[in-house]
Image: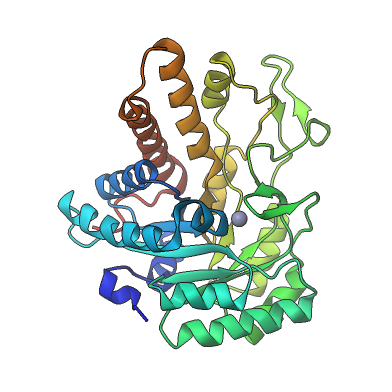
Length: 333
Ligand SMILES: [Zn+2]
């Protein structure tokens, strides 16, 4: 048993309380490799933004959970080396799907876990979430739960259709489970293809897809039921068209990839939404950089030469999100 406190990590409780009061949101960035982690920490340290490092089940399978844990521990030290005196870094399990997985992360030094039982019937979701909460809270680890179903594909999590969260359920759910934050479904979606062309309109000038707006009425109703309770948005990448274009220009094939417009996320960040998950955007930035370098320099075979550029792209992206979308810069001096 390792406590996250020994690793210099923090849970989400204070982060979220401040974010709701201050009208901003904490970035939750997924990581699978060193370059991604370096980019996240550099961006957070330079902007002095609290940050949530997310590890999905897929990341654990890809990179090994032991290695990821020590990387997160190293991230705290790296942040201090970069001059960030009191780094506020949370290590969070994204989409935990069983009590055993959540328990293993709590025991292993994670400061926060998500139990996603949203695909189960309501009462079973409550029972499993409460079991995780009861365990995690003994060690002051915070728990995110989910009500409603997001569409899209993200590692092992996928659903063809979305079901908005039912505002009439949230009080009962939060009270009976004791969860610390709640992921809701208001039309965000996992992956780089958040909407089908049929769900969108097409901008006649650019030919690009214009996605349907988020269901802010559902968010408002949830906030009315649970005033001041931390709300989480998953699947909130914007799928920047500059990266999509670059990928397509240099041999890739991502037709009609589309995300959530940043102005909608900006609006959400000012509300009780205090954690916004962004994964696909950094995947796109990484891929765009690698494709560009390899296309322009076919003789290059030093991974540092293209992964290094990918790291720069991701760092720029993370800073942009922190400063221009979430507003979390300067909140962790
Ligand atoms: Zn998610």
